[in-house]
Length: 436
Image: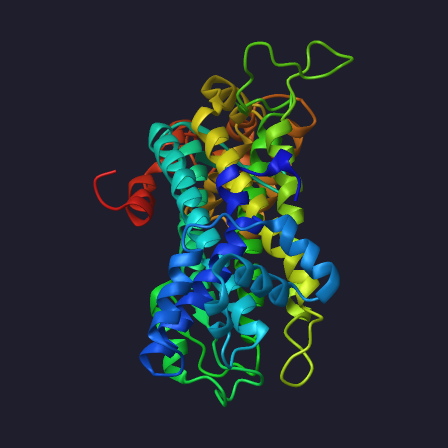
């Protein structure tokens, strides 16, 4: 993770100070539970909280200790002893390092997900506003990048809105799945720590208990979390790619905001490049790159090894911080997207009415022309338009197969743009609810 693509709120979740504070809270809550069970003195638990509650943990000192111990949790506990005093000896009774590390990671991933859900809400708000604004703004629907049939720009955005609604649901499910606590000891048998300690810590940290933790929380949960983030990233890219295409000079139906003083190129002063959505495409690749390592982390040896550890120290912060940044950037782009309805109308008519070809073909079949003959007649005239010979409607009126089945007035009625939008209200009601 680099600071260029990191918002302070997202980065803070993964900072050493946050991590050490969560570690302390796990240990201190566990001490409270142990004191209530008579495992350690109650005054010891109170002293631990009193000595460490408001401490700014000295990361440099912990690193210094770790250079000797070669163990981060032991280094932290040693530093806690330096700060809290003798009562710190009652910390970590019957616990193993993974109890602290995995429970902390669950807290961090949960907090990161909460932030991502807030981000998605911002994207949804922007998409909803712009979709309603352009509910009936006609534009070209494209398949394979080629003009297909008319649609509206509002419908385009409504589709993306529905997708980000699903993204929000996926993130909520991923959060539910990852928010588990494990305080179960060396191989997860609770041999030296009472299950009630785990339940207490879980409640205090807003987590659920892990049903079976071998020594670690099973990594299928983490893999599902990273996969959920990756799908959200792909949804970002799909919208980003749409905008990038629409901003092409030959299309120019929509454009990223371009601020006063902004420069598009060091060489060409005229340039207005889609740099924000190109950046979103790149960030989506970074987020997705976490999925395969996360999947490979699932298969640990026996009750635990640490092959997953180095991986998660990297991909956990990187994937969530990059996705947070990307979602905020996308929300801003959509809120300020410059839209050109007149260019949409111009592009819609670039092929001289060919976007109505299906309706003409269907009308012919409904007037006693075989589908094969109807297709051949419509396609033959369409190819003349592709060659730049004239207008589609005029060719159709002059075609004996077509004119034999449809009058000029009937043909002209088939070129009504509004015909394609008669169910826009229905689709919008499905996406946004009635009354939109």
